[in-house]
Amino acid sequence: MPRLPTADLASAKAGQTVSVCLPARDEAATVGAIVREAIALEPLVDEVIVVDDASVDGTAAEAAAAGARVVPGAGTGKGRAMWMALAESTGDLIVYCDADVRTFGGHFVTALLGPLLEDHSIALVKATYERPFGGRAGEGGRVNELMARPLLRVLFPDLGFVDQPLGGECAGRRKALAQLPFVEGWGVDIGLVLDVAARFGPAAIAQVDLGRRVHRNRPLAQLGPPAEAVLRTALARAGLGPPVPECRPLVEMAGSR
Image 1 (cartoon, one colour):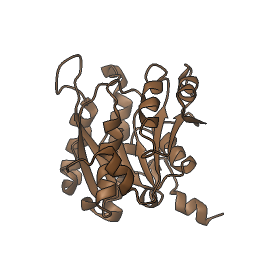
Image 2 (image 1 turned 30 degrees about the vertical axis):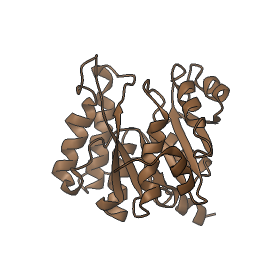
Image 3 (image 1 turned 90 degrees about the vertical axis):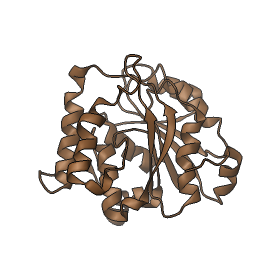
């Protein structure tokens, strides 16, 4: 999908507001630069929120110094941090970005917003990108390539087109995201893809290419738990496994007050 210039995107907001949200744990080295890049997109971006998920480094201080509103997280994982960001933010359009990206630029935000502003049938935008590992092109995203994408092709073939189901860069409409549960941990990204498709249809998911994405790669020994979380989430959504821990949809919580 072609990208509109930033000025045209700001005009296309047509009264809508935009929140950029970063779930972060121990990302003091990179979070400040990302926040500054996002804030520099005003008036396209209306607020930048960092959910500090129990960091033990200076993540919160770096984010606040760069201009973000920092929200203390519960320390229970990425999914709850993303859900808290949705609850705390005010934007009609929500852009999520990982806080460990070293090649972040404003185009991450503008590209993700484009489809939402151009096509009102789109509920979720997922990023695609080239993910190097150890300096080798195309070798990154190991859990994505070895677990998530095969799961989609086998269990949810209508979603086999999703290139980066686990990528942290995505954007969605508040009115759509508020209807969905957020899996508490590492299963949140694939859970959102599956839940958007189940509620609004696969055609409600768009993809945009962000180019090259370099981030803090985890050693192989640390990839087992995320891979298992992704597997458990996909099996639960396919009706082949027990439910996974998740945060209730915000609309349900609002209705129970």
